[in-house]
Length: 196
Image (cartoon, rainbow, N blue to C red; front, top):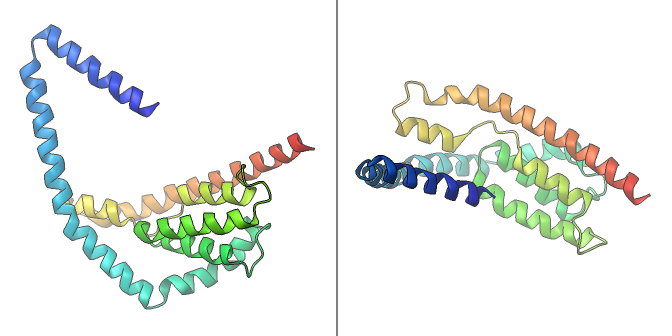
């Protein structure tokens, strides 16, 4: 659907430019935008590498493991159908810890591993289990303490205070996570009522 919306916007812009005689401006905007995108992507490599390196040091220092242990009671509450000592719980908690620390690159493989482990507990292999839906919802709206990518983009854009986004990001992701948990529980109850 998003692809269709983008296509409609693109085509309407081209048609409008053709009728108003501004095709030259469209061509300049397209080429200029592409050039800016490439320059920004290359410039971000160094900044994101720095952040990821710092986060990797924190991970090796045991910060992720400590956060995982701290999140264990939360995991038991959010995933009551997953045994506490099952490998799925370890992957879920590690995924949550990585997301909280802004380690998106580390969180993705952990999330995939958690999904694989949850599938071993799933009785109906053709349908996602409640725990799998919860993982997807919370992983998408995860609380983020350090939004490394956004900070890097703000630094690249010469922001006067690149880290000022931390407070608002924490607030927004907290609200998003609470909303995801509430909706997950509502849909879970609704689904159980429909099955009964």
